[in-house]
Image (tube, rainbow, N blue to C red; front, side, top):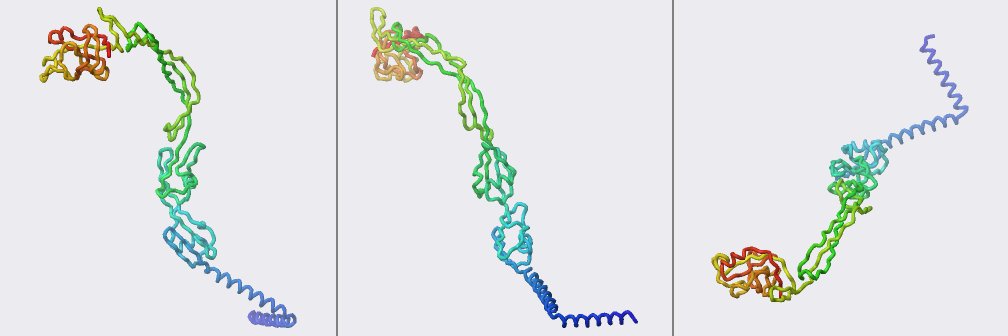
Length: 350
């Protein structure tokens, strides 16, 4: 018997047996039908569900509502023509599976400028807070370091963040201690005069400071300790109290004495210039018994006694007469030349 005929005969016999078995047990046919229906339904659900996601993509200034059959966030972004940069922020992440109604947010990275200890670095970032930005940049803070704005603050609009490196160090400095001044009355010295009996000397101390540095620049210091190395020695001054002196037959009572340099002049044009008119600054006649003074030292109108010259009145001034200087007046140019320049005591009487 040919093989084809044998196969046909086998199939006919199998069909007859199956028909007999189905008639004998009809519930088998029901199970077969139920299985086929379930398989077809599941297939339809899978096929139908594959393209049924509706998602919203918000990327910088764009909002896209997308019906997609994509399986992941990254695939949906590709359909929306949104290309992620290496530092862009995406939530959920590109590998996350899509779900119905999912909101996908993309934040484009921008440049931030971080000054760390004075060195500025440009960093492309999409981080929200200063702390996250520093973490991205690999910048860690020491216990005393500061950051402006603080870590919890959002990255400022201009992207500028400053990290201040704070360090402390103890330094030792030598410090001079000023001497004090001790005044002693001396009845043998004219009132107004002072003599140094003993010079003072500064003391010395070593002071330890704890210094705070910000980015290497000192901003504050606190004294930690102070060690005395040398005590200061006071300066001792003798202060005159004598208010009466004798010159010849005259006993002169005075308020104060001044040690001054005394020069001389006369009313002539050689001494007083081409516009000399023979009168003083106060309008009285320039003659012997008149002296020129610095009004800040001896007030105009004061009666004085000048050693070697005699009694006089302070009634004139001069451009060169400053401080403890006086210019005594003579009637003639020859007398003024003979006087020359002398160190004298001037007694201010009143």
